[in-house]
Image 1: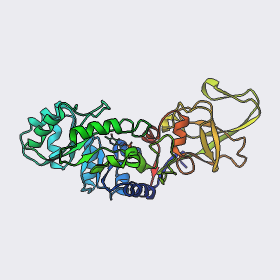
Image 2: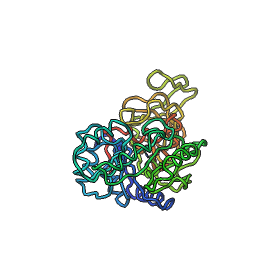
Image 3: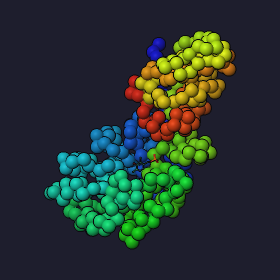
Image 4: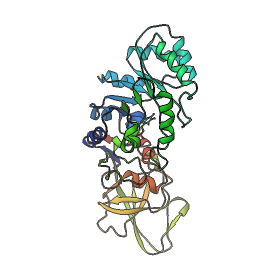
Length: 353
Ligand SMILES: *Cc1c(COP(=O)(O)O)cnc(C)c1O
């Protein structure tokens, strides 16, 4: 027997969520599989998402893995190339690159070959992270279109608040002003914009988080959106004890029992990717029953309240998030987002598919 923690990846749920994305749009779907498929395993996630029209990620090595595994659709490098040395690889493996800054443009200028590169030219419409400013964009676009190495150009931008009340309108307006008159394919929408703002869909949408069964909105549950959880992180109770009133639990003794209690120790800690800052009260499922985290999360273990879970015993199954315990709810309790929890799953946690 090995340590009981493991993450089960429900590939049928991943396919279902892609189908939900498709139902919400007539645009082509660029499935975002960055960060090891949001922690779900790059190749396995991509395989479940093989009906997507394209894949988006960051690292050219990951892109090559997908090509070598036989994926033929466009693969978009969301941060583009990081040096001129990568340009020959882009050509050889037919990778599509974002171009978002002047250095990339200079490397492209210095690149001697003609080779049919597909480029996504990024406009900074207000997030101020990547992309060319509105004022310089038209001139940059003309240059890129005329470049001997470039076969086609798609125009893109990224929204900072598609998931919030503020919405996308100011950024969408900037994009329309700069790119509206161009007869070129466009891509703007992440999961939140895909679900909430059909006017932003353009030619390509770029969903990530919704594919993995999590809601991009703080106020709407994934289930309400028809999304199914993909990753279920589970472990087991490995120790049980009885506390008297006044007894403390864990490092820092931050939780103290105010009455007799039954508690359990779970084989899961922050070195597995469980958030260390999750406070007492964070929901956890034991034997299918909701209960709560107690005290500080340790590197390899955490404590749960078993006072109201009489069936709990050594070996009882514990679900940290996933089936029956929405990752969004755990993330909210821990003051973070499901994105961070999913991506932070530690390599030491075995995945099963
Ligand atoms: C990560 C990312 C996405 C996907 O965002 P979600 O909120 O996960 O849907 C889309 N576009 C870009 C540029 C990204 O970096």
